[in-house]
Image (cartoon, rainbow, N blue to C red; front, side, top):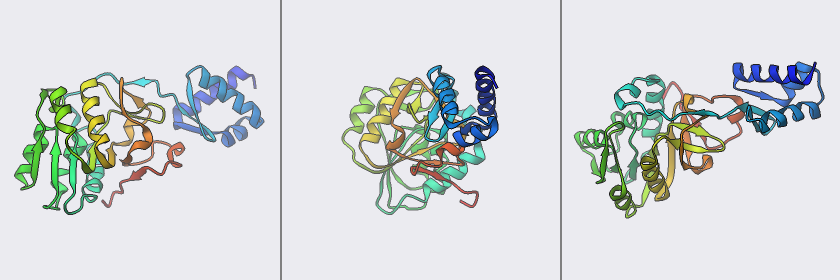
Length: 251
């Protein structure tokens, strides 16, 4: 098979499966390992895929710059978000001092929280109200209110966060990428997320599997800087990473 045709077929397989291994490509084309690796190198340099250990995954060129209103995002992948939120809520222990980021998945944690001695700090107005209604001690940081995400952002919020030291923190994200890490469309929100993560001992990113292989304009954390709780692996290439936890349907 001609090189061009073989590479077109590799891209078709990636589109269907999300990831491919060198071994399966060798078997599919009857080609040598060196030939397959040359193909993957060429496609990687062209930005058409991303090379990983033992194979390749889809290119992370799916730039996500649009930010939907909270009311629209709340029902998107709702069942998966609730499953993730249930698992996350169980991680909170007595006397934990917890940072709860704005976002729909972090918000779904609140009905499942049961450890009353835990204390919370959040930059989400709606989260603060729901936590207070459940009898939790909660602090809403001060700053500028961003209407689209109902989050407190800005310099005042950043300064407020710097005085805290959290035992655990839970964040949402718009994208998860091996190379770009955790990303969000807005630089002001990214600053708050990054600041809170810096002041947290154990960090958790809550995201359904649709957020993988997506990149938003601003990074707020490296891929390995937090444990990721998701509903399923986006593809087999992520199985090697120990910081990914899967929320089962029994959660």
